[in-house]
Length: 422
Length: 126
Image (cartoon, rainbow over all chains, first blue to last red; front, side, top):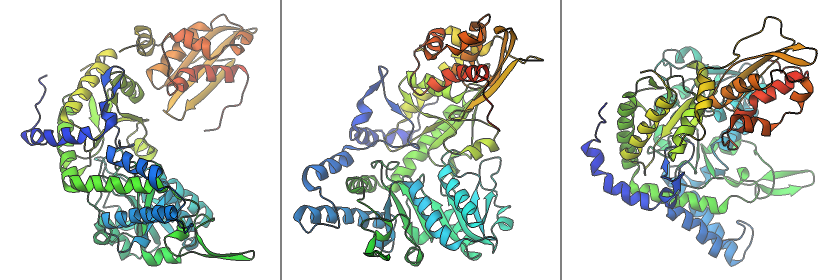
């Protein structure tokens, strides 16, 4: 086999990517004596020095509890925390920062909707529609809330190419459907779903649309008003920000009508021994001291991403994904799940002959290459394709074609070690 | 690089010893590792309390399956009390490779299945 060379378009971005890589201290480290090749971005991204420093500066210069004190530091911390909320609102074009609720992560955001909206609105006979390509965090909360309320959970099936079966949609999305919850981008198949179109179809039958944006928001421009979504959930740590903070965007009248999710400090207007009244949005949903430094870190991550331009981020990932798609297909016995590069995000989940994905990942790790192996918290997809697990390589702003070449070499090594035919 | 995948591991994985089922096993146990979907069944034939036949069946990663294959050789002729006394260190010594915390579950699944069978535990329902 002769290795393909990178496209001229890729070569043109080399300088830019080299500059980006210098912002990420961890990318300079070695693993098992080899340069780190980090291709596990779908699980979590690395952090630029701008994010790390913003959080350090907060703890060195600004820390106090928010919304409580009248002293200087508390006011400084509150201003920084609320400014982060404003930053997030602008990033996804939310009409008002009140509609941005800080949570721990996408999982908590989706649980908030399922428990708070779901328990107040679902009853026996109602249907919740999700899809077969969801992450467990957009399946299990709905299973729980359906069990509590007597509502029925239905799934939109996926096709052989790993896309939603749109022909099956009309008979599943009906006037019984109260909520349609779906991912904007699959974390296994890479499939990019037509969010605006699906939202419009949900609204046409009177259902609300809940979108899991964990994989899409870090990689594609997101405009909640253009998409017309009712709820959007995403996590900071997949978009160059810290762990421990996520976002729930919600339509204002829905959020206003929903009961609180967690009770405690900061979420109340008045507490009497006989009962309490709730605070206004967004604080009704932010009980307890929030992740202040993490919110500031998220704002710094958004600054960084917008500095690069989300259009550039998407274009860079598409080039890498196309290159990786072609190079991986040179390897006989390798099968990639999901649609072709033009219809997917920057991730490729695959199987290599009959080698167990944990063995593939362990062999790659010996060469300093980080990929994910397992069911990626999406067992129904793997069941659909009759697989227990896959190996997944995923890309972000700092990845290069040379790293994909290293991945391919590692996969040939795995094949040789396991004497796979072909 | 191939610390984890020494020749004996690959050999036991690609050419497993004692793989299959017994017609009338005295002891049979099956369990899975939900983290990676590894699956192992172990069946034993006894003479008194001594193991005279040991077979396994399963699917999963090289570490879990090689560990099961080696274990069926290792326990032949042992008494049930000797098996009950076996532990993690016996498996690590048998495998002879460095096992990190994440892969430990793969390495120890066969022993877990064996000991559960020997102690007469009920299998988890499917």
